[in-house]
Length: 460
Image (cartoon, rainbow, N blue to C red; front, side, top):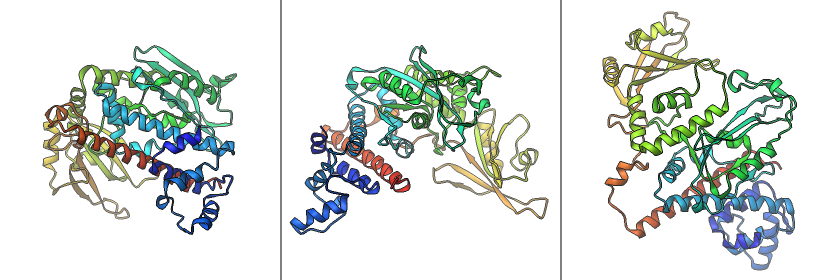
């Protein structure tokens, strides 16, 4: 089976597989890559060790030396599974015009996707789901997990919740971390030590349940879903990540709570209610259903209107109080100011929410400073600050708009319906060329991320 799959793989994939094998110092029946080459080159007189400069036949010949070694062969099968899943999803989103696939594509096209979803899924304790025949499945499920901090520094899953598009609970399990817990993070997770007493469900049990739920490439939804998949040690290729779909011009991700307040006009949970990952899974599902029902443009307009009423303040020296900040950046008490501090940091940030966009723009214009644009094309001004205490260093406050003047939230290559309707339809040849470039580029980028992980985390 492995030989047939290697024979059908593209050279880019084979090259990346050999490079990963190099980094892991994987040894086949004819030794590691360099030993294999020494024997091979003695016969033909070549001496190039760079896999990218080797022929497909040589790459396949080396990778075929592993089938007799069960662990290494299983590893190669996982890498191929990962590649096949991504390729299958790329093919589907290229050929499908459904709104659900557009949201999958928006997730894939986000600049953070490659780094966030480059998992070490070839490791032994990871599971790569089978995509099956995705054309037969348009089902969607949403997941959310709770993690704790253990004494060894890891953050294992202790609760998993999955709901379907009707918000019916498909999975609601407590999970035994099987190691001493340092911090249950009860204020975040809602989990206590007593909750886990007598729990026998393991992460492997959860993986099996999710494999069954995600058969035939069911679309999996979540908010910052990459974090949940990493904790679950589960690699699933067909995903919608609401933190990536609702894109901001500055590249930052909005919280699930903020998105629900803005887009759904409701809170994730009632004020004072204990945290429950079932609520978060349901909230992510509701966000996606809202987009599917109203259309992406309409949902993003609501989101854009909300951002246009804000100014983002950052690099604020820690010695400045909120009252002093409201004087330097003219804001009355009616402006909602959310301060964000980081432990031991010399500065903090804040988000100012105004009554409307006009009020936000008026405040921005009233700042007596030169207007410039940041790397994302957002207008900002810098205000010099002199501390009252001479022992403190002088600083600057950066005040930035949250939307561009043209009110666009995302780069031109996003899949907004308006752009699709207004665009001149390309030829079939151009469509195929562009799609192939997107697919190959994304796959190569993701494989390179995996290779970099191996360089930094080699077991040998």
